[in-house]
Length: 80
Image (tube, rainbow, N blue to C red):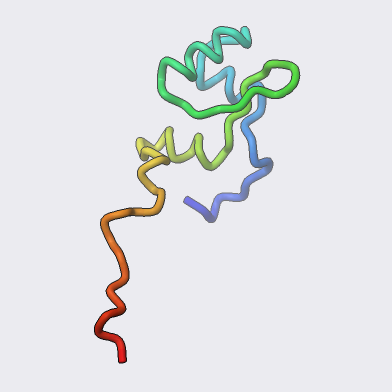
């Protein structure tokens, strides 16, 4: 997955249009929100989606599940 060269860090307008199936900015944003995508808006109001985030999302991986786990902690009490 990480060996595929990344041209840019964010998806192009055309790629967001293809994923959302919408050419209009407002429809793209509505689709992204409806489907639980994390995105930012640039100054012009266009949705900005990270390329790695999109790859994970399209592969069926929840990107937020890859964060630090709170179920593990270091037990240093037995270290001498």
